[in-house]
Length: 113
Image 1 (cartoon, rainbow, N blue to C red):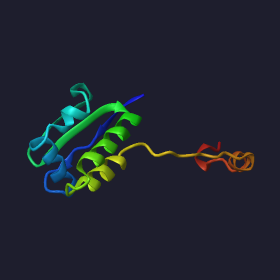
Image 2 (spheres, rainbow, N blue to C red):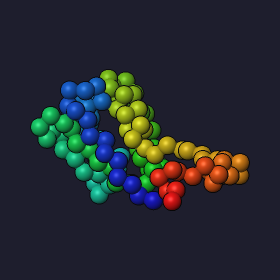
Image 3 (cartoon, helix red, strand yellow):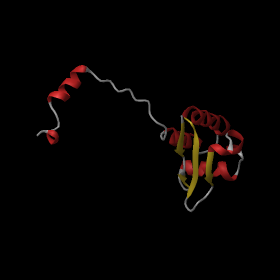
């Protein structure tokens, strides 16, 4: 499922300086992902704006390519970590019958008549 990830960063932050380099000094964004899958601008008044419109697997692949291409560039690791932190986390929720029973036996007082 396609998602929107806002990878915008303040221009004076470590990940933001790296994002600025992607916009100003390279054409890497246009090489790695189709233009229809991102929007943004290098400076909108204090922030470098980047919004990704793609599936989670594609975002992860994009970040992996960024790491490969720019590993030696200051801020690369921080930028990748920043964007990964915006992805949905894998959560496992376990429901046990015992917990469900406790919930039924102890209803919220606000709903008691």
